[in-house]
Image (tube, rainbow, N blue to C red; front, top):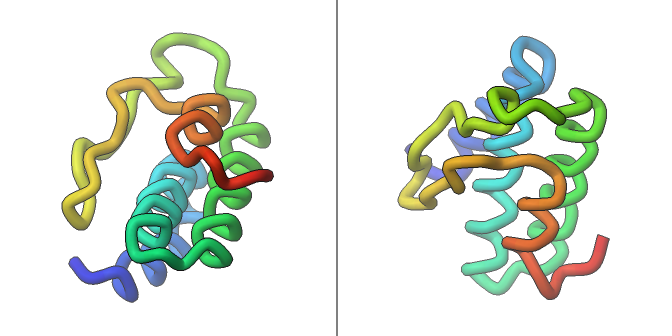
Amino acid sequence: MNIQNIEQEFSRMKIENPRKAAELAYVIAKTAKNDGDAEKATQFEKESIMLFNELNVQAYEDCVAKYVTVNGIALPDLIHADVVRDRLKPIEV
């Protein structure tokens, strides 16, 4: 799956499954950061954090990643807004 497909899937999941969309936004941000595109990385980092905050992820079970890897990016076993912030440093949100 290439990054354009992931972005399309993100747009679809944002409506259908915001929890998965939050993880896909993290993958897009991480990929953009690795590619040196700080603007896109920041945009999708904010998207991910916003979605996780809207979902009010608090319980351990809610933090378990739905995806293992996407586009070569391994997701943390447990993921929520603070993990996204920490993993994507030094991008400021």
